[in-house]
Length: 376
Ligand SMILES: *Cc1c(COP(=O)(O)O)cnc(C)c1O
Image 1 (cartoon, helix red, strand yellow):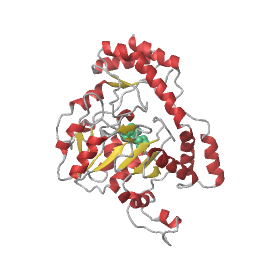
Image 2 (image 1 turned 60 degrees about the vertical axis):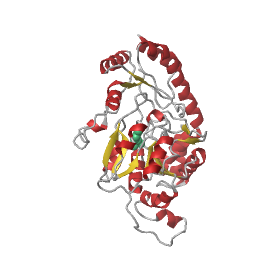
Image 3 (image 1 turned 30 degrees about the horizontal axis):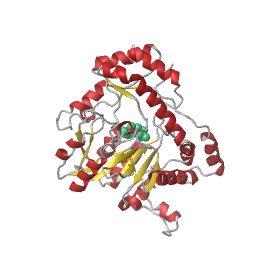
Image 4 (image 1 turned 180 degrees about the horizontal axis):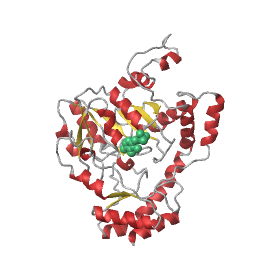
């Protein structure tokens, strides 16, 4: 049996969790939380980082920080996970869903400007499969209309964007805010877990308060105020130290994890390239401005029938492949609220994209077996 995903343990996770437990510091914002946050800040150039219990939580924090009010509009792709939109809908936002690109499931950057109205507050690009959206284009639109950009970088750890002047920035370091996930299906994991990256100083102080249930507790512990109390809205967004301890073990092995996943990705790509071209099946595209963090390997089939046949054939060979994301503008919850525009590319990926097994411990011969079954 080849599963779709298998969480990878580097070996140090339980050791660091034991350390956290026996140090007697179990709640959040302790030694391991700070180590992880500093790692992200120094490795990727995020201005300020706060660990969260999920990417969903980081997005909810971002929606609060963006001061989304009922009736405000937020632009994002329809082809994404529910949390991308839920976080904003919770604050009363109306979602203006954009279509995907024809050559890639990411947001069609050229469709964004026509969706902007006086109520638009933010653009939320999703770096699908860890492959960058055209952030230069998106940041320029945002600057022109004075909008916030919140990157859904759930899948995008250790991936980069190159600007036309040659500047390279990590995904998550470009928008005003960015949210990452450490869910067990992502490259770097802590079971459930996430991160909010704050790149605009305007939000730093308030982010910490929202993170600590609406109190100025963090400032109190730094000795900046002599008592702490309720100063804003907030929630319990910070993970316990045991989660951060687990995450730290993963971060120590980030390079190894990434290089192994890239090997897998290349084996798939080389093995399927010719077959895909002959059979009119799409493979992941990496634009020149983007890098590949090997989060995902997928096929874009010609039809839903072809996809079902491939999934069935893999299943009968004990290989688990999955599809995901039904266009959110057609979801039972949002269908009625959507403005009625057709989003054909998003629907196309909903019906035709299939993800192949991708995890650290996948073996070379297993990938070769998967490739043979697909080709057959
Ligand atoms: C995984 C994922 C999320 C949610 O992450 P959680 O940590 O599970 O909350 C949000 N958006 C995208 C694009 C994702 O892939």
